[in-house]
Figure 1: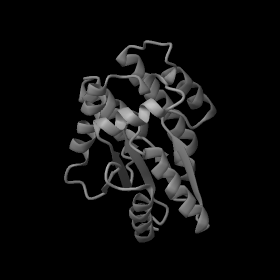
Figure 2: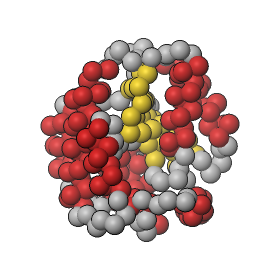
Figure 3: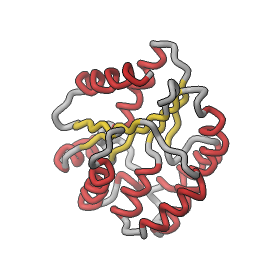
Figure 4: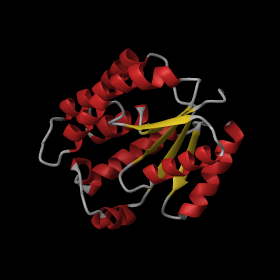
Length: 204
């Protein structure tokens, strides 16, 4: 594994995913490690514009449109940010390849082979080194979403959808050594921090 690994943070809404990425970023900053962080959708200036379209709660986009917009955002990020920094800086990404499989395949029933083919076309054989998967139960998911002052389009799906997506994530992670599961139901933020930092200490 490179001393500048690619680290992904995955999970459904309100699972603590973005908080866990921030824990990693603060640790790397403290250790004066060179790193970049980006999110999907989002990243480049153009990708951030795509993000606004995808998350706009006033739009009712077709699932295929969703898929293509996500891949457009990933293509821009990969060509203009990830390739430029690969093996030069630690790369932290808020959602990546597996989120497309979890959301668009397991959640929206889009053919898995289509997703894999498009992904191969855009990023080739590029793979992450480590993935942190944050999980949350339905009760906490509902409570946390209800506390949010602003909800985007992806915060407003039915609870059944998020359950399907999370089960998809767990299928993806099964028997994979590079996956670290973070249960936000039983672990406090302090405990999550210990798990994340312990792993980072080993790989950097």
